[in-house]
Image (cartoon, rainbow, N blue to C red; front, side, top):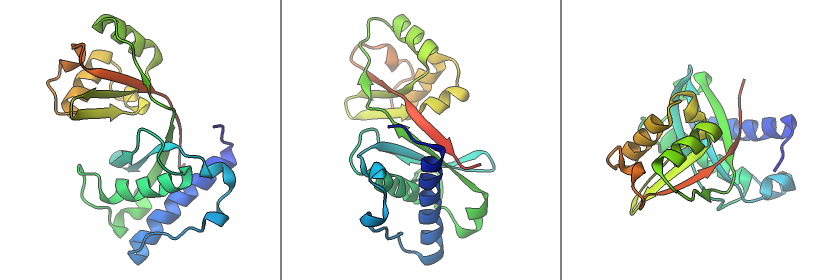
Length: 188
């Protein structure tokens, strides 16, 4: 999917409008399907990240497409504001300081592992989003996390901890690794 700058602004404004509406009225934004251009009705997986003065304030999304792009953005906007377990619910007073970033994910691809060293080399070059899964445990980091954690071993160790696993579990063969890319854009 390719988006113009105008498309990106439309989606950011939709997310902002949903956030403002629920904080002012207590109700979710009602959007008529007929008011949404066709290109935003394709099923896509997204993450919505909220920051306040540059600090993370909420980030929620889906890894695989389940609903239309525009609906996924609205749903994830609400979830990032009110359901991220790392933060209290967003308040009206915080609204002016909030900046929205939208990430549209590619389909995750299973990484065919040969060795921990090969995985490290691959991640060092490509710096993709990573999904780590083992049994009922799973976690993901968007590619943007590479800006904070540039070392692949630290990245994977932190991801293991996020999934509730020992930090060296990424080295084990029975851990499933998938990768993805994102198209990201944010409010100025």
